[in-house]
Image (spheres, rainbow, N blue to C red):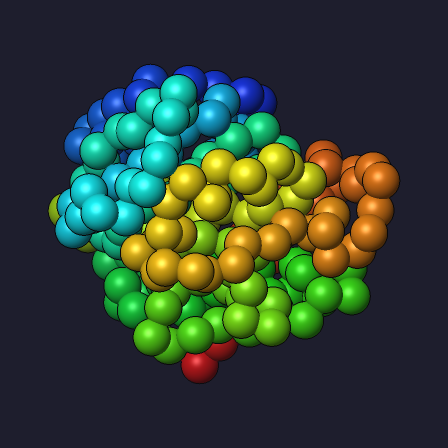
Length: 206
């Protein structure tokens, strides 16, 4: 069973602390959870993050965190799903979890006529080599936290203040820019993303 929590627009630091606390105190009987939320504007820098990838953060705060990867941006109009999964119980490897998340995003995008692809050298989901979803995880005591962010309909300018995920010149896009939509049903997209993730975790591809 996977529980869903719809948290709305929430502070990054408080949510980061809550993820760690949940993971530290869970046991073998604790249900897995998916947290769907947005954050106010924030840059997050992974454990291997290099300061050189922060080009001009300006007035947007930078938070150093414990996931893998480099720097990315979160802001309103971007769905973030934190994947709080007991991967030992589910039988997944870390690589298998990454692949499952990528497959879930690709399947969700396909529902909207968008052809997403993964890149074995750079986690995340891309459309014609432009990044639409970023992925970063931490595993502690056999359980994951952090997760995936999908750009739905957001201001993409802050991505130009960094080298997204450590890749200079990487173009970042959103569903809205691809679809040319003036308004997307963000809530429906969020639910579709949760559905797709839950399907991947409960019906793993062999």
